[in-house]
Image 1 (cartoon, helix red, strand yellow):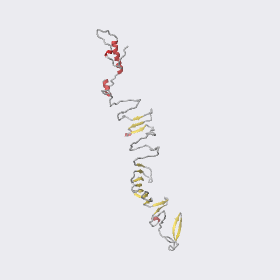
Image 2 (image 1 turned 180 degrees about the horizontal axis):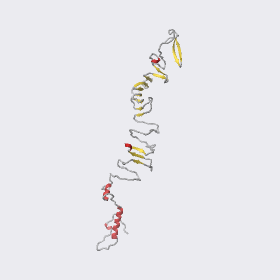
Image 3 (image 1 turned 60 degrees about the horizontal axis):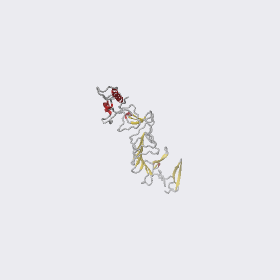
Image 4 (image 1 turned 30 degrees about the vertical axis):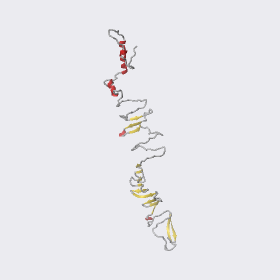
Length: 312
């Protein structure tokens, strides 16, 4: 039985029977052996090897250069491409006419999608799925975000209990209720003059840090009402209230250095001594006489007259 050379080898002319007219007798192998090689060639090529191209050469030219190398601009279409190894992309792009779903571990419902929903690029999880970026012990070195938006709350829960903003300004803005029931802003900035907290949606009402003079100031519509001094320049820290300082209950307040508590303008000091201010001199029927003068002290609901000898 004849064994074909092709496709493992190319049959040579001398390998097939050669006969001379009117000299050699015709035998069966003279016809059968070449037919066997022809059949082997057709079996190797298969049916319609040219496909939709004009011929096999035209079809090969689509993806193969003349030197046998693959062309760089291939656009294959796969219904389902399964790789047993790694996918190496030597170019710079992975393109798709639709979204790109990233699946692993045979997951069919939980996966990440790279797409262009609502006219914006996004990487998002499939419906009702839960994902996270990174795992314990694997950190992101750095990243750049102009805006981080969320449909719900955003939780910062570092294991070290610290949220660090490196060389940045922190601004927390919202419509939460503050002292004056309005939109407010809490701002932390670098060493400079700036508002720490703004009230009532007013740009110049709130606590203000005066870095130039190292003092904390409360301003109302830009006007300073209270100043708190506590720095190395001031030996004794103190509070300065421009509109007077009151101590008392909300319904019955008392004000220091106020004309309603006396006609004088001398402030009341509480420390090593007390200077009281009244609207008149000492009382008594014989106010000029020694031992007949007194001052009134009100303690609770009782008023006490304290006598003295008239010596000032």
